Image 1: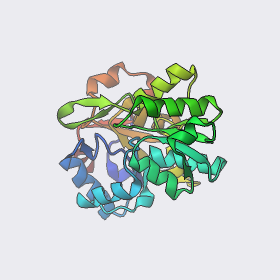
Image 2: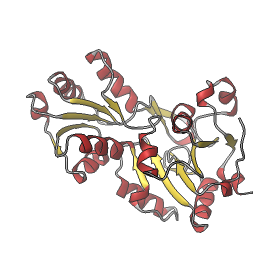
Image 3: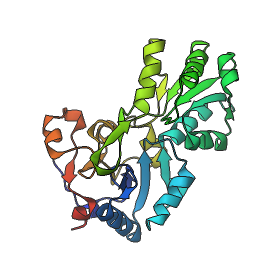
Amino acid sequence: MSGSCRLSNYDIFLIDLDGVVWRGREPLKENVLAIRKLIELKKEVFFVTNNSTRSRSVYSILLKNLGIDVSENNIITSGYASVLWLSRRRPNSLTYILGEEGLAEEATKMGLRLATRSEALSGLVDAVIVGLDRNLTYSKLNAAYKAITDGALFIASNKDPTFPLERGSRAPGAGAIVAALEASLGREPDFVAGKPNPWMVKIALGERGSANAVIIGDRLETDILMANRAGIDSILVLTGVTRREDVEKAREDMRPTCILSNLKEGLA
């Protein structure tokens, strides 16, 4: 690892949410204070999350409740990244959503038509988008499976096996649901929108390139790997799932530019 962890060295920040801004419902106060300071300094701040259960508008409200004033245009969820990718290839697609309200809201806003379960079972669906669904049933899984076997595109919001909760615990993530479909279909998704795919970086930066940009996250296999694939500096913050000793064992492409215990350290 090389490079400085001084946040002042960068102009554009792509910051993870779970494990960086909060852990479960618990705000990470030192990180929140540092992010507020970056916004005060007129830095350009994006939030990039693999969590598709909430829409960008809901995340904007949650962040504003923490004193982080950011437009939903500066929030990129894996759900939004999924529907944006699909809408650019097949506008107005009839889409079966295996996920929660936030993913469905983003699909509707993008002009996709939401398919019912009966439409999914009848071979009428153009695409299936899979995110975290904490109300998953066998019936929903079967409808997604049937639609994909009948020719629908298989799009995964992300393949995170778990997501962090309060007090260091974890729960199964969207990757567990994607894995169930992969096992039954005998193949991988046609597209995985979320981290570590650099697609989310492209959405944030557009044509500007990666100059003076940094990705901040708590996971080596998503945040840091995405940064390295995109050719962008990365800061691993140890407020989420990854420990310092994990970095020593990690593959080269999962090693961050530098490590902070919390983001407040980077303001010094």
